[in-house]
Amino acid sequence: MAIKERRARERAERERLIVRAARELAEAEGWDAVTTRRLAERIEYSQPVLYSHFSGKDAIVAAVAVEGCAELAALLRAAAADVDDPREAFAAVARGYLAFAEANPALYDAIFTLPSTLPFGTPEAPAPLHEAFAAIAEPATRSARACGHDPGGYTELAWSALHGMVTLARNGRLRPDLDQPRIDAFTAVF
Image (cartoon, rainbow, N blue to C red; front, side, top):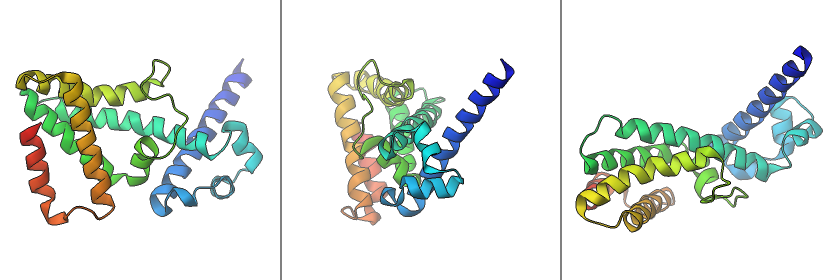
């Protein structure tokens, strides 16, 4: 049994190594630079070893997205943890979401913009996807109720607005000098 357990640990460590290398390369050079050949070179394993863990780049991006969702969920929950007022708690979540996207652009893309085979919004979705959405939806729901709004529509509109701000700002479509006024307006509305 010890050999089987050791092999399982080694396999899991190789998978973590592949995911970490993909994230680092994507953050440094963008997702186009992430190829199985470059990853194999970077982790010092052959491409067949990489393919024994992941079916290809899309599967690696999906693994990165799942890992990123877990990190996003933890960050957003921490942002709202000690804030009692529902609107202020959601404002803290919004600021955390924007900061996460700015600090991790390739990771954000893996989660929210790149094509994915992950079953988002379904019961079959990996737990971290549900946790990330809940970390946004729960404080948004409390904020919506405090304002007398429908929680579902409020949550989707607020999340859409946050994603729009991230996307437009990253592509140079929003004025950087209005970042703080934009966040202030968002938190006043939501």
